[in-house]
Length: 516
Image (cartoon, rainbow, N blue to C red; front, side, top):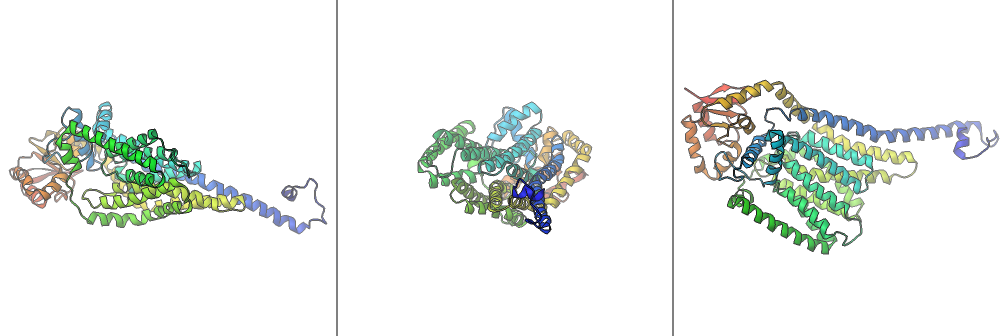
C-alpha cells in the first residue's frame, strides 16, 4: 500500500509492472524523508524549550536578589540617592561636592521615584524597572524580527536568545538599579514603530505623526542616558537615503524636540544641568576598552556576521538598510564610548540589539534558500537556528561566576543586614564605596568614590578637604568593597585611610573605623 499511495494509483499494481525488489527501497526512501522532516521540524521547538528553560534558570537568582539588601553593582546606591533627593523635594542637580555628582539626564529618576514611592525602596524600584525593561527590549527584538518576515517560532527563539545572551554576558545589569535597559526599551519601541510603518520599495509613506512618535521615543531614551546616540543617528541617515521628504520632516521634528527639552531642563535645573550633564568632564583610558574588546570580540563576531549577511542578501528591503546602518553606528559609538573610564559593556547593548535582529533575518533566509524536498527546507531552518544558539556557550563560565556571587550574597543576607546596622549606628559622617549600603542604613555617603576619584584627577585641590577630614579621623565609618583600598580612590586618599583607620569587619564587606 506504500507504493500505491506514493504513485497515486487507485488499483494495486501487478507483480509484472512493478518488481517486488523495488518496493522496499521506495517505501524506505519515503519513510526516511518523512522521518527527516519530522526530526527537522522538532529541532526549533526543542531549541525554544531548551533556551527558554535555560533563560529562566539564569534569571532565577537575579529575580530572587531583587529584594535583597546587598549591593549588586556600584550604580545602585548612586541612582537611589539621587532619586531619593529628588522625591524628597531637593534639587536633582545640586552643586558638585565630594558626595554628589550627577551626569545622567533626569527621566529615569522620575520614573524610578514614582515606582519607588509605591514599593518603598528606590533601589528595589530601580531593579524592577531594569528587569521589566530588559524583558521589553527582548520582546521588541522578536517583534521587529517578525515584522521583517521572520517566522513566529524563529522570532520567539531570537527573542529568547537575546535575553539569554544579555543575562549571560551582561549579568550585573540584569535586575540591578541602573537605567540603561530602560533607555533601550524606549528606543527599541521607536524602532519597532518605524519598521512597522515602513515597507520595502515604498516612498513617502512615513507620516509626520509617525515620525513624531518615533522621535519622542528616541528622545525619551536619550533623556535616560545621553550616550544612546546610535539609533537616532541611524534613523537620520536612513531617512536621508530612502525618503528626502520624511528626512526634512524628521530634522524639523528633531530640532523642535531638542529645543523644547533643553529649554525645559534649563528652566527646571538651571546651569547645573548644562555643566553636569551636557558638559560633563570625563577621563579616558584604553585599558578597560581593550580588556572588554578582547573578551567580547569572539562572543559577538558570529552574530555580527549573521546580521551583516542579512543586509547583503535582501538588498531591496530598505528596512534592512536601517538595520545595517544601526549596527554600524552601534559599533562605532559603542567602541568610542568604552574609552571613557567607568563605561563598560553597557556600550555594547545597541550593537547586541541590532545584531540579534539581523541574525534572525539571515537565519530565515538560510532556511528559504534550500529547495527540494520539504524536509530539506525544515533542516535548513533547524541548522540555522542551531547556529544562533551555539555562541551562547561562551558565556557559561561568566554566568556561573556571577550566579555563585549572587548565591553567596543571598546566603549571607544576615551579614549584610548586620553591616548596614553598623553603618547606621556609626557616629559622625560615613562613606560607602557600595553606596546602596549607606542608602539602606539611612545615611548619606560623604564620598562618591568613583566620581570623586575621577574629579580630583582633573581638579587636585578639590580633594584636599576630604584628605584632611580622613587624616583627622572625622569619618565615623568607611566601607570598602575589598581590603587594601579602593581602585576608585586616588592613592593619596587610600594611604590616608590605611594610616588613620583600622578594620572593624571584613565579611561580607570591609568596614573601617578610626584608630584609637
